[in-house]
Image (tube, rainbow, N blue to C red):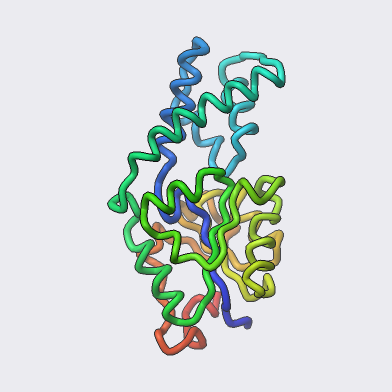
Amino acid sequence: MNNIKACIFDLDGVIVDTAIYHYKAWKRLANELGFDFTEHDNEQLKGVSRMRSLEIVLQCGGVTKTEAEKEQLAAQKNTWYTEMITQMTPDEILPGAQEFVESCRDAGIKTALGSASKNSMTILNKLNIAHLFDVIIDGNKVSKAKPDPEVFLKGAQELGVEPKYCVVFEDAIAGVEAAKAGGMKAVGIGNPDILHEADLVVSGLDKVPQPPKGGAGDWALNKI
């Protein structure tokens, strides 16, 4: 049994739910291209990079575009998305998320953000929680999308903690797979039927046992 020394958090769906803004932007793009993009279709985009997401959206509409056109469309979607997230407030932090990250820090556990988003700093600054992470690894620092473990391995490296002493908190199948591929424990945030590869699945960070303030030696997560 390895005592946990670092916690690495995905952003969307774990700390904050920006999925609705991504969905609204993709739906607007699809509508302008002449087709609809449903919430059911949107499930395919969880934990997926922006360009891969665009390809999925275009496939849903049976639309073909050149590489140059795809770049333009992805940029347009991101402009709409960025406009929406700049209106975010700390009230949008998911229940118990800030308290859980703070409890980890109080117990001497290092914290990192590991997200595919290129807008992580904008969101963290709007939520006033950037200071809660020792290291921030996002889409501006990595080139490989989950389920490749690059984002989490880079987080562990910058924290100076071996992967086996890290636990990742993820809401997407690809994220859980990335954590496991990187040799880390994974706590799934969401549906246990979907995130069955995770070592533990809960509905939110408010349901994860907080580490003892005196140190993480007796922490329940050490036993998963």
